[in-house]
Structures are given as structure tokens and as C-alpha cells.
Length: 257
Image (cartoon, rainbow, N blue to C red):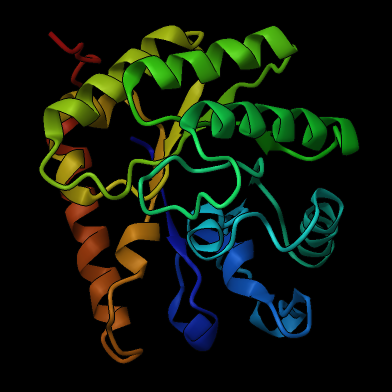
């Protein structure tokens, strides 16, 4: 793993003096105003080197049956960020497959996977200029591979991909290792892989660590901590990540058994 993105907390943005920042469209959406509450004042500053925009599918679709904003509105948000700061990566609007997701619509994982791919195609068609990252959805290995096959059949090509529906799998190290390594093997060798909300305990597995290019603090950021605690938590987290990178430095990519 090379990059780690800290999810921005709009109430304490000045604590996020980190080179890589993730913005969740879900956390910036104001349901009463039916629009995004993002402004120039809470965008990352010049210390940010990379910015990843995520659609916020897990948080939004846990509450709602569908996204409260359109692909066009999501693209407008991306251009607002791009025009006022920088935009390195933007995830397509996917449909998570965890069991706790609202399934008033799209009841099965098969439906959610197909909608994920359809949305990605629509994102690319609407604005090919944006640095899209297609999100591979599913819950089992076979479901993830089906999703990837559907992407290939649809003509989607990318050098950067992301895995969704993995942030709530505590205690399933072997399952997570098999998912990550299997997907990494299916992608082209030059492709980069992002793991959304992957817990740091999984990163201690050298097979997982060596097969992903980036991850983020989406799951970690949901923890109920005060703003005063966050600077120290970020500092501690960065230290643990640096220690991991040093311990695995020079190792070849390992494969699942």
C-alpha cells in the first residue's frame, strides 16, 4: 500500500493537515436544502496533495433506498472541487451490498451489482474528463468477479479500481485476504486497487497490504471521538501506517494460498 486518505470532517477541517484527503459526497449533502453544503472555506488547503471524492454510498444507502442526488449533480460537485482546489480521483456512484443497506429498492446483490456497473457507465458517458475510479461491488468472491466481468463487458477500462462493501468485516481476515488477492490477480498488472474503509488490522496481513495501492479512514472516521482527540488519533494512525510500510518494504507481492 502506498497511499492512505483521511476522510474530511467538516466541523474540524483545520485538523486535517494531511497530504491525502477523501471527501464524501454523502457527508456534504444537506437533505433539507436538497443540495451539497460544501464551500470554499471547508475545502482542504494547500497542504493537500491528493484529493479523492467518494459518492458516500454506504452512509447514504444505509438510510435511503437510492441516492438523493443525480449523477449530474455529483459531477457538478466534482467540478466545484476541481475548480477551487484539486481533484485526483472520483469514485463512481456504486450500490453497496452489505446486509444492513436499505433494500427497499434493488433487493438482491445481483441487482445492486448490475446497477453499480450501469451507474459507472453513465458516469463515464456524462463526463469522460473526470478521473473516475470504478467501484467493484459484491459480498462474496464470485459476486465481485461477476461485477468485474460486467465492467469488462460494458467496455469500462481503468488503471485505478476500488473494492466496496468491505469495511464491516471484523474478524474475517482470511475472507478479506482472498477477496483482495483474487481481485488483484484478475486486474491488469499495472492497475492500482483502492480498498474502501479497510480496517487497519487487515493491513497487518502482508498479502492484503501488498495487493492494494490505497485505502482510507472511512470506517475509522465513524468512531465517536471529539474534535480535540482527532489530531492525536490521526498522528497515531499515521505512525502505525508508516511502521507497516517500513516492515513490509522490499517484500514481493504475496499470494493467497
